[in-house]
Amino acid sequence: MTNSKKVKETPWQRDDRLTKQVLVRMFKEDTGRDPCDSGGIYGRNWERNQLKNLESEPYCTLEANVYQFKDEDEPQLELCATINAFHFCNEHLIYEPKLDKSFQVWANQPSRENIPWLIL
Image (cartoon, rainbow, N blue to C red):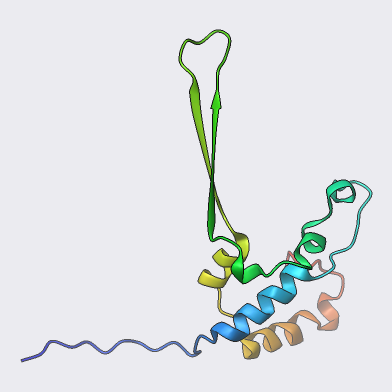
């Protein structure tokens, strides 16, 4: 006797290639310049991403620093782990063209033309 449960199916199928393509476009999209941002000196993220192969970037990096403070005998170790935003989004998001189209139609209705995108 087997005890099998029916798994509820999602209304969409994950298309890893399409999601990656959309994410690459998003990470390389020109988001403009602002007098108050600091990207002018070192380059903005979208500018630095232009020549990167985002898929080949490491998933996670670990930085270790040792500090010796004057008033302490023992040095202090600081560890900082950073998860790559492209890989994180690719792992946790699914791009669904039909839902995106529905949202675009809804968001672009005349009654919403003066509402900022982040509020929608």
